[in-house]
Image (cartoon, rainbow, N blue to C red; front, side, top):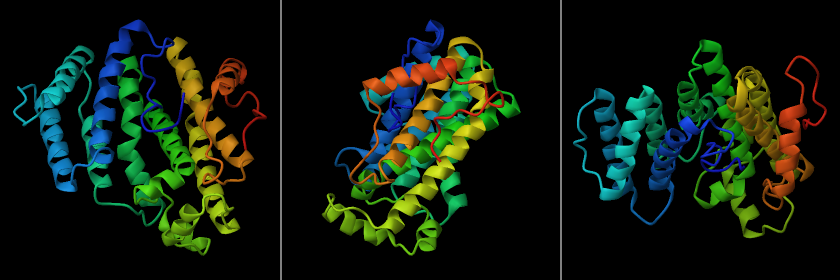
Length: 295
């Protein structure tokens, strides 16, 4: 399990009920495919934008129950054929899919976020729809369920931003809000120097900025975590593993001195055993205070 790209999507996990696995694979293929249009390959921005616009029109066609008229490639049509069957079979809303496409389209033109509200709006569209779709699949869509799912997904996204500061900078992006950088006397241009000499320790101000963002991620994960204990059976256990995976990334980030340039936190085989232990044995939120969370 990794809090990276769309690997926080529980793809074909054996913990998921068998009846949901094909739907999760189809939704993942859509999310991963659209994200790759925005991020991968050498196509110019205009071509990427046109393809994402075609995907948006195709989703709208599916939502209206009409044949897809958008100009799609054969590979894209295969993705949408499976997606359309999943939408009909499970009665899924298409707005979360449109929100994802909105975020991926934004990635083509927006590389900086002025403040916390701007970053949270991006997370609302780039991360939260994944959790909402999973809740619709499992039939748990009460207001509290949705709000706590949003908190978990935003927390995972923000943990990923902390984890990938250097990788995002290589793509010309910075997901640390500009007002946070300003509070610490920093400028996004300062990342160039860190990238030029990745073996050099970052100044304390950069570590402090990452620490602040990691704290926001952790608070969001903990705010949403009651959902992981409230959902029944294997779905709840799956979500507990996801929450603990995000918290473990943040724990490793802290252990590495909030220095993702030299110590990018990743989850390995040993972490899998630890996460399983925590998912099974960590008390329900409110019953006790887990001792393993980072400060």
